[in-house]
Length: 435
Image (cartoon, rainbow, N blue to C red; front, side, top):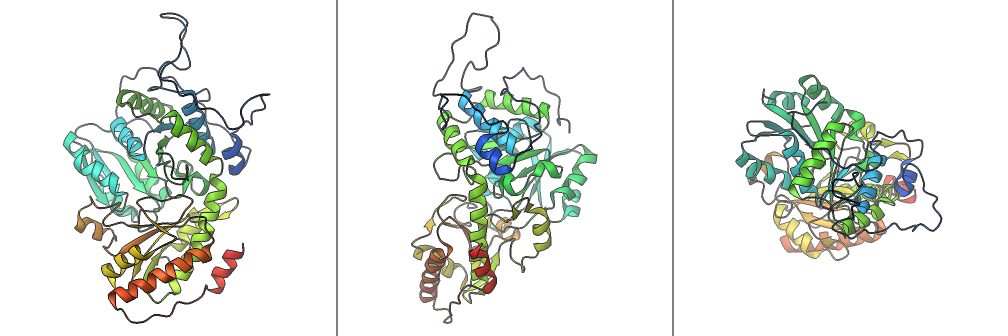
């Protein structure tokens, strides 16, 4: 897929590996060792942090050096970029200080005044804010459309559309998008397709394999996984896009820091293991929540009741099994008062604006992650004021369920809803927990 516009772009320093690799190793092995495990005597097993702003050069106008200034490139950042690309069967990624910095670089790379972008109607609130309050002021227009319906995405496209940006599963409703179906609409029209794959990571879903041009990540979430380092990344198999992303990153100063790159690379090494466990625990808890009379509705792609369960089984199948990620959302009987009482009552789970970490985290989307999204737009996308998002951690699922049980009881007492009887895990959930 060609760039939407032709730009004069200076040559950029790229990591040593720039071609698309052909992996023969499994995802867990690649995440841990890369495509070619190193066997250098005396080399640090943990890697290194090159905490330097600049690098020595041999002479003025001499031969190009791998690194000159850390705003442009850095050895530790290179290591992370090579690893992120390898796990997605792509050239080295381009990393940024945050996920939103990655999105900003994407938009600035492929859009200019007068262009139009189609956005999925249920996406991260920060992306909505970026489109409505920043890009719009630069003359870049947008239309929100439900990406679950390819016909509505197609109807939203105009002659000025240069990019379609979707998120699957959507935050926080977990609705899915058929990436291949959207790609089939975009490619004949020479429109770029970008997919925010933060919730599933390349361990479960690889958008580039399904026809997307760019995969977008907040590496702050599952990839780093320990709540210690902000970061973002763009991956693509298009060399022109890679060069453009690097040029915009250099020009805006948005590169990932060496320390955060090191921490993110450390998290990446256990990503496949963590994603599988997050998914298994989330399945158990989603099934339990679905049988709890205090809960009106549960959104999780692994449930048979999920409206897109067939798509989930097809899209989320991996060599190690079918997994649906560690994030779910649910609505309580009693609406907003019950939800707020519940969020105040959790003890093991943490109330925070985050997902993908090793501990379980609950979030009130309407007042936290999506507070900047107009209320009418939130509700139209299925984000009610009473919706609770749960990022399931690595605790024993039974302990998380015990915390949810007492918090649900506290919510019942606070809003005086009819008494409910908490049920034990279903037989299906017990089987999942035993795996």
